[in-house]
Amino acid sequence: MAKVTGWMKTNKLIAILLVGIVVILVGGIAYMGVAKATDKPEFCGSACHEMAPYHTAWSTGPHKDISCVECHVDSSEMAKLQHKIVALKEVAKHFAGDTSFPRATAADVPDARCIHVTPAPTRRSRASITRPTPRVSRA
Ligand code: HEC
Image 1 (cartoon, rainbow, N blue to C red):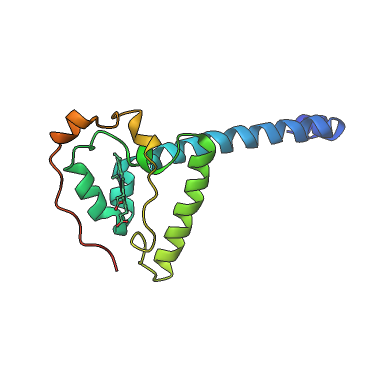
Image 2: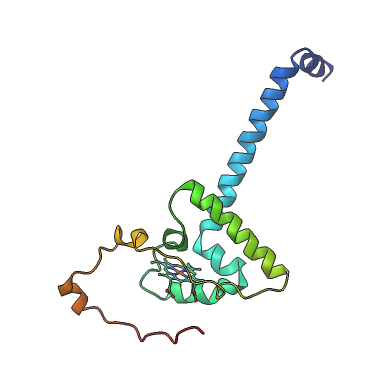
């Protein structure tokens, strides 16, 4: 140990750099693990009480093989990171007693996130789509 601390004293800059790299690596790997786990629909449905009915609807619907984040978040890592911050704010609101989420804001799901998976219906295919009963509009 004395040898290591002696080396660290003489090579302070290298030691700081090495510790920095280790911290960044460990932090990065931990973040990726947490990010992957919290991207899963099971997490959305079980960890967050307010999301449970949406998870139930999704799990019985035609999109049950598509992850929530594929429709609700852009695919870039930056967008996903930003969404984690949004989700953390929702968690904070929950514990502050505000359960208005997710009804407080309308979901923002641009067409571009879907049409690369399911092409926009043509006039002919549109005719065969069975439309769901329209929802009662939110006040
Ligand atoms: C195939 C794409 C798709 C998937 C997969 C999907 N959603 Fe959605 N979701 C949508 C769209 C589109 C809307 C907007 C509906 C509307 O306009 O009211 C929406 C709306 C919502 C809303 C807001 C509802 C409201 O009243 O405003 C919540 C919450 C939600 N989804 C949660 C989830 C969760 C949780 C999952 C996964 C378990 C999920 N969604 C999976 C497309 C998707």
